Amino acid sequence: MGISIFIYSIRDRVEEFATFGYPGIFLIALLANATVFLPAPGIAVVFAMGSIFHPLGVGLAAGTGGALGELSGYLAGVSGQAVVERSHIYQQVHPWVEKFGPWTIMVLSAIPNPVFDLAGVAAGAVKMPLWQFLLFCWFGQLIKMTFFAYSGAYSLTWLVNFIQP
View 1 (cartoon, rainbow, N blue to C red):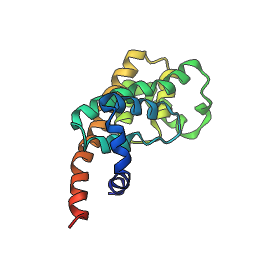
View 2 (cartoon, rainbow, N blue to C red):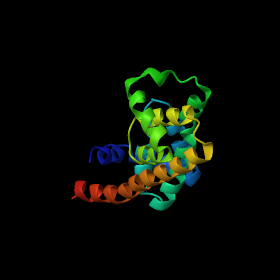
View 3 (cartoon, rainbow, N blue to C red):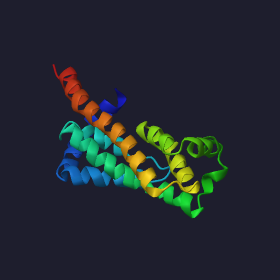
View 4 (cartoon, helix red, strand yellow):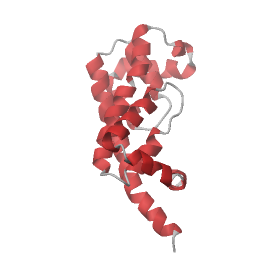
């Protein structure tokens, strides 16, 4: 409900994003997911765009951009220059990535959480094949982004009807 109110309050600016269509949604998701540990409003934009464009197309564009954006964490893990390896959360995520590999990547990328950046670093550190990381990350992102796009498509309409008498 809170995200619905936020998106409704910035609805005029969201329409600016709509002028770029699906490529704009792809780019926003790519950039939002390329930031490691910095919150970016990618999901909020996907939520709003679901009410303007077809939600499945929004989910596909955002899921693809999001998966490619997550390469930043993976590449940090491959290079061995990730400073997060000593963090408590990383120590919890790393064994899951080692044991369950791409399935961990899929599940963690399908749910909104700040831990996924660490899972991407761990996937790179354990030398998970790039194609596996991208495929399973893409599938998880596709699930998450499509869910938010459809949620936006239905909840914004409901919210407008609720607010306006």
